[in-house]
Image (tube, rainbow, N blue to C red; front, side, top):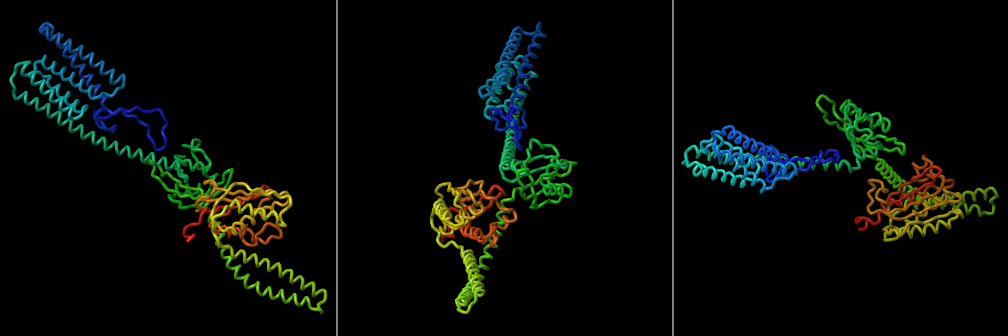
Length: 577
């Protein structure tokens, strides 16, 4: 059926950017819910009312003229009234009480009954001379709207045939120009109504398609905003919260349901003053912030966010709304610091290599000369003491230069498949035999087989340096845990760029690393241990960089330290070539 539809509004809550869900009763011949035509329920109800009025009117007309009316007319009008009442009540119960959408059979039955009713009324009131022949016009028009074009044409043809039959056989009247004009009017009304109805349906279908695309776009936009890791906040000119997505709640640590429609700017000023300042500047002066950095100070942690703001036009007479788009950039900042650290270490390594070569050969000559002087028979005790001191310090300086050369020569020379877990086990066994490893130290290896591609010698040095540092830092009753395996996706910092990573974690129960030392921990000659050279962790950093990995340190004073190293499980094609 054409012309529109009915909507049932469900009781489920609506989501952002989503209107109330509707369930349409799609009537036969209708493909739209957004039609400009009256709905089928409205048209059918109008048919019921018009039908009842006609039956009652014709019956009252016959009853009031009872004395002059023929008995057959009284009988016919009475039958028409009763039949109309029965059919109308049954039809109303079917469509409006039971809520059933009328099918084509139902519509045909209604149209046939209405044709019979109007023809009876026209016959009783004079046939071609009746003033009620115009009742055929709304009948044809409503049929053209409610039924498909072919069905409407069939009903129109039936109306014409029945009317001609009544003219010729019911009243024995020849075909006059008036009758021909009436038939032409019937056909014209049917054609025009059907054409207009089809055009309106087409427009409604186009509008419904556009509305559907808009609803889909809104749903997709809402879904994207709910799932992106970037926070979005919109406030009105008075600073009231209009919209926020889950990422914004997670980053700033507030709940939308607690602040929706309420002034939230004081809370932003408390959490992140720079964030509040960017929103305020945009609201007051229209200055859009681009990639502004703000510090968020929550009760559980402090971190950086990057903020961009923009304005949206509000209602007429109101100021602009301000939208802030922001994200946690602490991981990217951390990775940037790591890259800078790696670049500095590379520069230091090149300089160290040059200096070590320039110093080591003259130092060997000096040591040899001093030893010869010490062996001379004329050397007195003071001279022998001084020469032994020079030799001892020369040896220490030579060892330091050797470590410098080791630091500068950290390169991946032989990359092959290996098990990081086995490499860690071998390094732990070596550390247990080291003179600096306390006898009561407990080193535990956890995890399982961890296949990867790498330089076994460099990886062995990474593990041994980290484990030795851990037992030395923890001292007596050292408890060190080494774990290998595959990390969870959320454990790797965003933007690390390590494909298919494997992880090595070394945790100790030592005193922790002071903040001033932690910031420069991987630089050469930086150490928190008395007597340390400060090159062990620098070598670790260089070896990890050579494998295109990443090393992170987390330490809390009094609670120990954890070094976590991430390696790619396989080399890149261009590296393997």
